Amino acid sequence: MTKETAKSIIVYYASIPDMIRFEKEERSYLEKAYYDGVKSPVVSGMPHGSGSGKPTEKMAIRAAEHNAGKRTDKHLVAIDVLESDRETIGEALAAMNGKYKRILLWKYVNGYSWVKIATNINQPCSTVRYQHDKALEKLGEILEEDVIMINELVDRANRAH
Image (cartoon, rainbow, N blue to C red; front, side, top):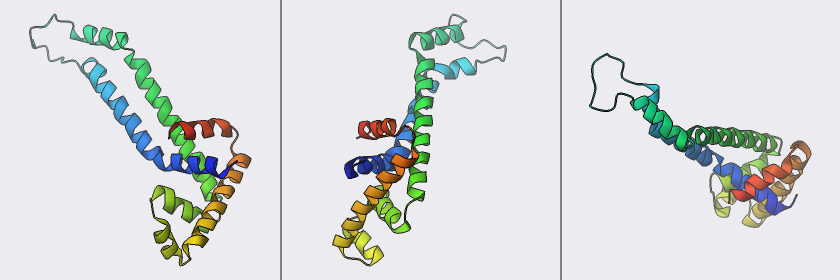
């Protein structure tokens, strides 16, 4: 695996929490838009409003016409895949040397500059960049060895950019 591919995977890893949050928000929006009235109709026995008397049926038909069920399921699948990818990449990072792992996490997850990383580990920037390149190589090696469907993970990482 090339360093660029490993870099796209670590960038993807850093963006997964935001992607999960987005998928959950979209799913919540769909549920509220199509299912809130279906899930909790008023059952007090008192008349409410001047509608046709079958608002639940209308809402269910509307949800079916707009494929709301499939769309919410699609978000659940996306969340599962993202969480699985986060776990897989996290395990690869956990298998790395602490120094290499720290550099990658500081750079891509925390967004630290080269200078800040160099200051934190008390090394020159050139050394930090060299170690960064080595860390990307090592991450790529670990992922290739440990991940069964690595090509799919790489494809998802590349599409996320």
